Length: 195
Image 1 (cartoon, helix red, strand yellow):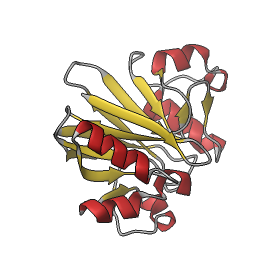
Image 2 (tube, rainbow, N blue to C red):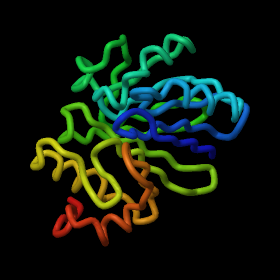
Image 3 (tube, one colour):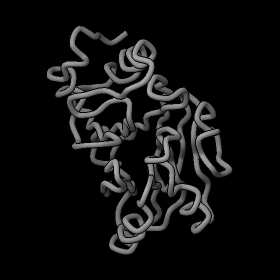
């Protein structure tokens, strides 16, 4: 599986392109402020063509380039309806428990409100047997998102701390991690257990 990530915009938001390999179709996750050129460069370098644009939530630093990229490639933007009003584009709705089949990938959707009402994470299994979770602004390396902390804690307990320790966390900001590393060392998860 090919995962291309780069940080863009004033808040250094991570944008990801996911594909089964090079010279094929891909999905673009969280193309935020100033992400268009980085996406175009990655598409050229790896021979990729977008099949869909996915948003972990509706904040501008994650979706500012979504509508333009979707229009440019004639594809849909997917977002949870809880955040639809934050996206200046027509979009398809994501729901908890969905599995999207895009670009040859099976992408599981978990609704994780707290940072925003419509926050979601995307989970994938790689052909090589690995596990990936794109966590947006719900979980970071060493931190968690801002927002309604009670609701966010429920999302973390119910949707993220239930994942296997070897699940690679690709967050909306900062470096990658794993669920095991966060469970063991993230001070904001101290005392939390999966429910």
